[in-house]
Image 1 (cartoon, one colour):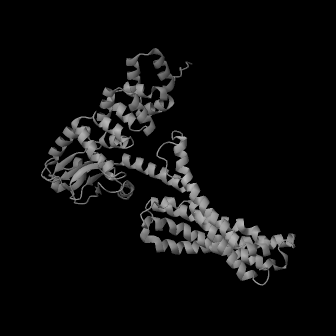
Image 2: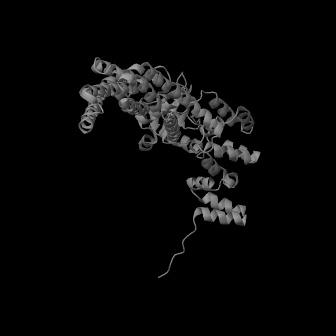
Length: 463
């Protein structure tokens, strides 16, 4: 029986080639690897990241470059010779090049744009002219288009001639002589049609298009609802400007998810990887919300000061303050998280506010009844064990706790569900109605609800 020798891993092979310093071997090795494996090499050997890109065939180098983090991209471009940088930037798809450039300082953008070929420079400046986070920043002008009078044979000729530089040929776009988008055709429909058939006999007039000024988050929803690999981008006059592909939308969805998670955690969105962001910048991102939340919690102290006399008369009420306000905060945090997530994936819109409110009133009452019952049972059990804790009015204290929990949980649920919708209506990001923000809001109002019920049940007894 013969034993097969285990092949060294990619990282080990790369280390061996680096030690030999044979550039030709290194190039052949890198060009034989999968794009994702080369990206992993860059992550593992950051000191060689620019050399790895410089020693690859340019089209493969561009494919690796566009999937790297922005910090890695900046480091690579900083270390590459100007000629190689120009070659790399000209090879990048227009949308990926724009994504990279918009993360740089204006002075750096000007210097790098000078390295582009005239046509690529024109395209890049055009894309950079669209608002940040708009579809125009994502679109690529590389697509295949045909005219209504073209036959299927002519369509295939066009594909053979122009598809090499196109990001996708899954969809062919039909325009008129003015460049106006008429329709789109799946490549499958073209393949199955007879060679003599004209384009106007194949199309059905049903297509979905994005506006260049549309928000990227909106575009992500359109992709999801229409199950497309690419969508055309038009201007206000329906002139076809470019296309947006699903890979761009996946990046947008990932960025939006990360941003929302950070905002829901009570901080500003980070625009760099956590370990790469400077400490002072991280401090600035976090301190603002902490100050706001701290000032909000100061209102809790103010509210407790307002009820100081009542607390002095019935110290037993203070035992349940953490229980009451935390229950309201928890229910509000639950509701806000559910609604923000549902809005993010398009399950609900602003128009659904009344349906959401009705559901949350029912949910809040049910949740509050369960917690209120548990709270009442807690008072009963503790009274049976140590009657002196709550005294002769233990039943009214139990009722105060129970009804307060119902009220606070209901209020927390309503606040947590309605606040994201209200912010969306006002044009703000619903994610800022984060769990910490809702919890702080409910803390203050929870005290008011608690002591209001205490007045109702205990006035003339303990108060």
